[in-house]
Image 1 (cartoon, rainbow, N blue to C red):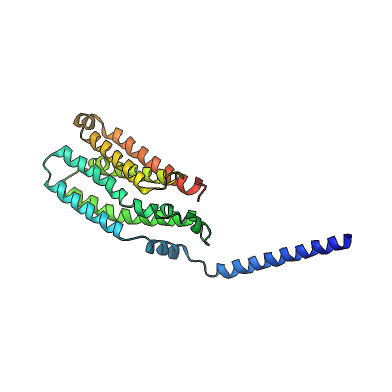
Image 2: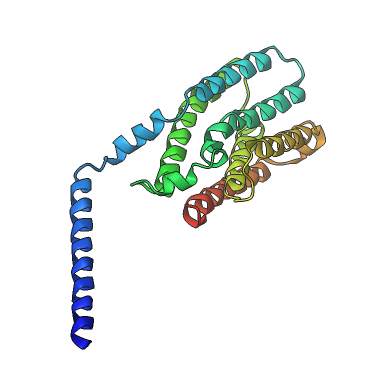
Length: 235
């Protein structure tokens, strides 16, 4: 009986050794085919629908024309704030497609983790949006004569705040529909539009106060990105 038990233990140990050897062999062969960071980013960029970036460019072109023709100072700035929110909303379907179609479980079983995939996608989207927004800001200043502080208040702050809101909602497991996020972003757009149309509030705020609001919005965005990628258990 004792001899039979020892034979079973030896057999199990041999199986474990064989399994470990097979795993090491597999990872060694796969490591030779691992993509570089640049190749991985390009691969993720190819999976993003370009139509959303095209719509973003068209949206900014339209708001530039509207602001150039608009006569009312404060109403035009309110329109710019709404545009900033819509600029981010256009990316919601792309960010939500994995969650809404329940692809997270599938991507969790791939060679690359869901955290790596989402990090790459957010990086690609962020870089492309910077490339889109930068010439827009320069064109906006030339076409409308807006100052840097006005662009920060009426466009960058609502855009950054909307981005943070989208990422926070994306990290909430119970929210699977992109339409909930879109509706909440539109509510935020209306709220900020009301603030920017309060002439007395805008005029009373010093540039330093708006700078603090801008810094806080960036801080919240950074925290939202960190919570989504680092702390979310699904990642």
